[in-house]
Length: 171
Image (cartoon, rainbow, N blue to C red):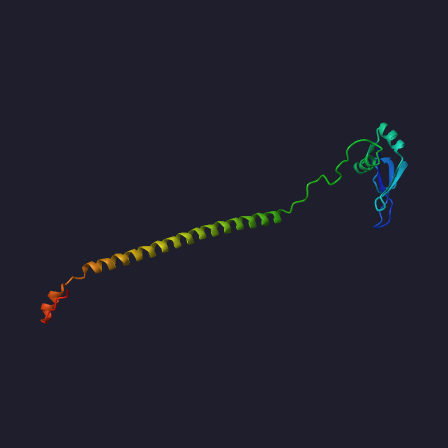
């Protein structure tokens, strides 16, 4: 099957590409191609593609690569939407890192729960202490009232009789 794709021809750190027609079995770096259909320089953003020849080859059954499809859409050689050319594979997941992250989350959740319980306990203790203080104050007040009630009321005359002093009446 014939394929139209990009072939890199630039130097190191200076990429430039040819648009080539090649057999799908040939690798992109093999250098084997049947026809050059244009070029693409991404640094200078220069795109030259023989659009009529590309359309003719596509009608005969040649497939185009996703990146070249996007270039042809942006050059308005073909009509359509651009294709996402990012890797289709899911990223490799480091199981050890995932397990550590999960353990860390669980530890944080446990610490939060313990802190919440501790705060509730402290609030209860404070409330109990306040209740005890108010109860102690009530007890003190009732005891003082009882002491006042228990103290014997002695009339002045009785005191005078016990001391045997002359009593003057207070008017």
